[in-house]
Picture 1: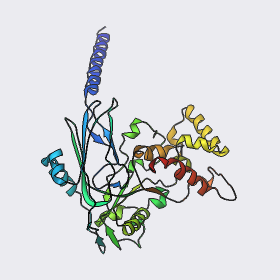
Picture 2 (picture 1 turned 180 degrees about the vertical axis):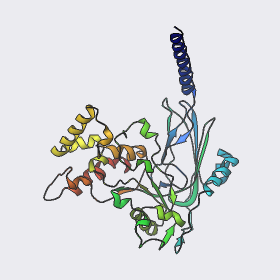
Picture 3 (picture 1 turned 90 degrees about the vertical axis):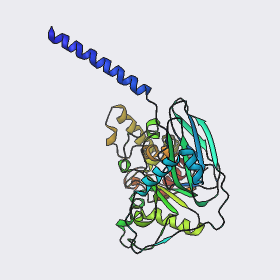
Picture 4 (picture 1 turned 45 degrees about the vertical axis):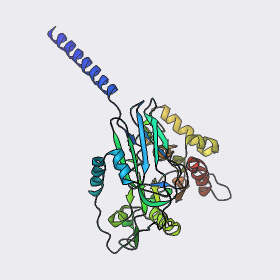
Length: 365
């Protein structure tokens, strides 16, 4: 009897503790935050509406400021907050670029920049979004700040120029350090910025679905300024493409690299598009995948699951405005996957229909 009483008391204690914990979580306000792609040193697309979005406590009023004025940013976020942000950024050091020449463009006649100040109320899910307007290319660093009654965010050194998404297989992932002929040679430009998916996202996982959890996830590493030793961590092809645009157009260039070595075409397409293609081979693969999933098979075992890379890497940045997409190397489908063969051609046709004509359509606005 004593043992039964002891168990009952423990159960009561656990229930009380659980109720208190749930109440604490439910009552905790969500901290203000921007989408993961927003960080110091990023590039925003010129000539088109710029979307800015994030999360806060449901119903919270969010003030957003986009400005090139240090004084305005300090007044909005607080001078101490601005100094703290600068000190944190300054603590990140890279090895000096040996044998490289640093080249920076300067605006002789800077474009007129109109500061943007917006107010928005977070919806019942905590989401909020504002339009930062249309701006011309500029090498003048800008600030993006957001605040609520309890939280403040400030990101700095933003430029306005051309933004491109880089995708494909491992050839798009290889860094300078793998190509010895480029190591410690050539020019480096602080007007070229680079972002990529975090290391935890480099292995395809079907646990990624286009839902709220993925939307709020931490998929991207902070933006890198392509100067000093940082350039050695940047993938070679995206950097060379960015350098070409940068030197030809004389505007800042940002490249977001979402490439995945050994990926399949179906991973980069959203599910509805795959179904619209009406390929017998593809339909069979989709049916087989759905059957295995229904049976409860561990989805992580499915390498190349339909739409997984689209959901994991494109869905979280679907609201971004970009200039275009570059794609290097065909997919693993050439080795036994989907083959829409017509006149000896299959790979390029599938890439065009899947990536450029479908999944990327939302970015080309």
